[in-house]
Image (cartoon, rainbow, N blue to C red; front, side, top):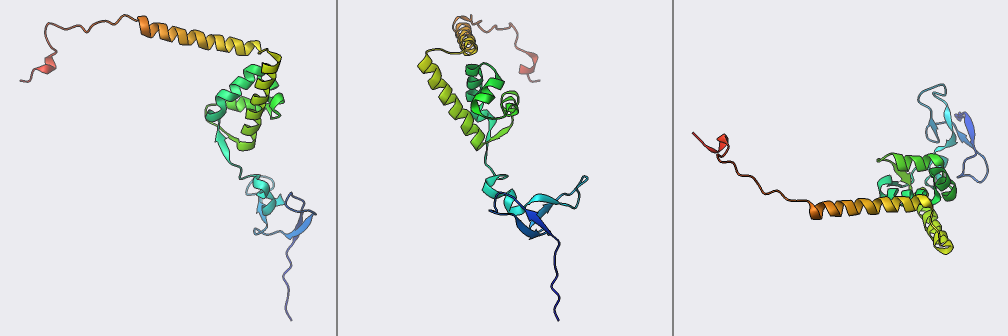
Length: 173
């Protein structure tokens, strides 16, 4: 007579299953909470559903690569909130990109932002108008570049001054 060991199971209704599936409640199928009030209990989805469609394994882009483009989108839209609504992403994502120097954004989010910027540029070109905040930023950039250029061209160069006696460390005794 053989005994079949039966495991306590759990239903998974995650994205990798067409219909809910009853799976054994083991570490082979589920991730378990390691701390907190749910410690020892399994997560809601099975391991396959957690990694389904790259949900937790998406590639990320450093914010430094898209920062300039996102700022242009913000200036074209007027505010960060309007830019987030226009791009169809969360406001906190726009704030994260524009405030912090070191962060990462998932590739689909970066793609949405760049496509929104392209769409906004086309709309502005077709309408023949640009948001005043973008014009102001461009004026400031132009003024800064002119000031830097002026300072480098017209800065008087002082010739090196020679002392009558060289410093004491020149002489070895």
